[in-house]
Structures are given as C-alpha cells and as structure tokens.
Length: 212
Image (cartoon, rainbow, N blue to C red; front, side, top):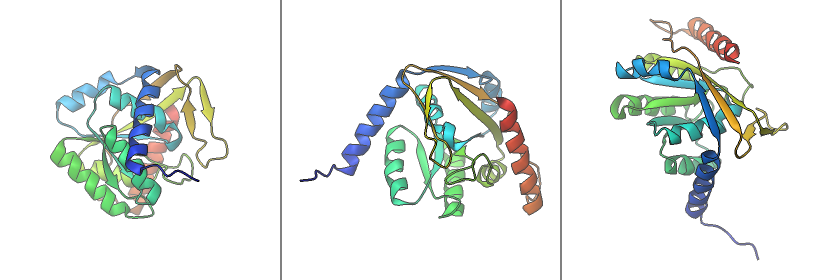
C-alpha cells in the first residue's frame, strides 16, 4: 500500500536537507563587497541569474541572512516549492511569465518597498528559452528605482541534468562554488516600451555572458 506524506512535513524535510546540503558547500563570492555601498544608500537590488545556476545561490542567501523575495510559479508544483522557499526564510511572489506574471511582479515590488527586501530572479525561467532574459527583473528594478545585479555561478564539482530544458546544475556536497557578482546598474530611465525593453534584455544577457 502506497504511503502518502503530508506535503507540509515533506516541505520541512526537504528544506532541512537543503540547508544541510548547502552548509557543506565552500562559497567563494567575487564582487559582492562592491554592492554594500548601494545597500547603505537604501538602493534595492535585483539579483539576476540563469535558472540552471539557482540551487547554490539560494544557499548563500540563507547563510548570509539576506532579506530576499523571489517569484514562484502559480502551478501546483510552484505551491510546494513556495512552501519550501518560505521555510528557508525567503518571501515569495506567486506567478510566472505565463501565469499571473504581472500580479507576481506587483507583489515583489510591494515587498521590496514595504519590507525592505531585495529580489532574486531567474531571468530565463520558468521554462526558457535557456539563457534568454525575460522582462520581469528589468520591470521590477525600474519600478522600485533599484539596480540590476548580474550573477553567475561556477559549481566546480556538479551533476548536470542534461535532459532538462535548462541543463540544471546540482553542486555536489563539499564542492567549491564561485559566485561572480557583476557591476550593479540601473535600467534605462523613462518609459520602457517594447523596443527599450528588448534593448535592456540584450544588455542583461551580454552582462551575464561576460561574467564567466
């Protein structure tokens, strides 16, 4: 007879395993110190990374006790993921580029303004195309008067899920993880029409590509 686990209990278990896993990783942040001056001035930061590099960055945020918000899909899987992320200390805004995207961005903006949080956005998620930024992070940064921070991760010992759309990377326990924080920059001022937004997406893609 199949045994059904309580979703809340399962969420607590996965969050515990995740914390334990990330506690073994040897993080090497590069360029993070330069962001402190922006934060001291009250600037909100929008950390932008590729979906396949997400696993290890979330662990660094927990270790450094950053107050962060991230966007999570409105799907049933997203509901389960949101429970885990909330247990890890992150706030979640529910939605995606396909379902409830505008609502999620508004939630994230509200949390950044009212709760003093920064945002972490996987800019090619939730389903790709791989390494092609969507507009959400740029929109959020422009609305809060914040700065975009390109982030890339190098997991020196990892398993790659080659059949997933993003080739998701899982750092093996006790492996070294180098995190490259790029120079923070503001999106173009004024109205971001379709042409301007496309330029900003290209700009972000180029900056992410230049980091590693």
